[in-house]
Image (cartoon, rainbow, N blue to C red; front, side, top):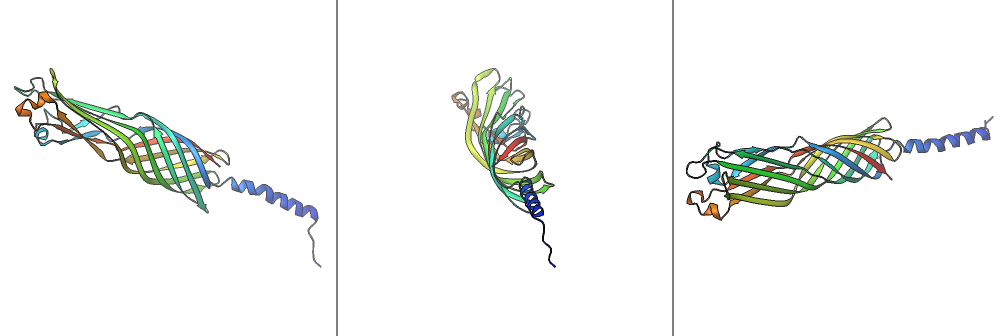
Length: 257
């Protein structure tokens, strides 16, 4: 004899299935999302290398530096992110783009020993670098831990507006000087890792670390007319290589839709 489930049992089962479906959906990180991030630039490269010219490189390191130590290199930045995630089981994959803004300026200087008959008070060599608007396009790959936590690694291409300057002055004779500036959009790479914790089905908190390297930007400080008028200084110009590599520790809030 066959048994039939009472109608009330069928209704209860349907209700349980209906209520369970949204709960399962809330554990996923799939779909498009946008967010806001802010963080501190840290672990930045700090040495501006003296690259040339040959005449400047030939000066003793007591007069002209082999490199400059850059200071005031850290700073807060903020920006926006947008991306998309897909998943397969606990595996989460996706693509993300970001744009960040904020000051990130570094400067350094060196005062050298006297040069008899040319610079009795020595030379002061200085350089600075500023990273402006920056962005990246990165792949992401991670795994969920439980229902509400995502751990991920990320990497891709990066770019930023970078402006560098270099200067040399004869101490006590500021009219005798070398100067130069260079601005360009530089490309490089970025890699990092992070975690997201879901507050609701649509909102998550994020913490991540990204390391970015845009290479070294070279800038030439050419002598002015006063320099060119001194035969002993012909061919003695300063060229510096300013670093752009550094890390960023960021936090953010993500909204999925």
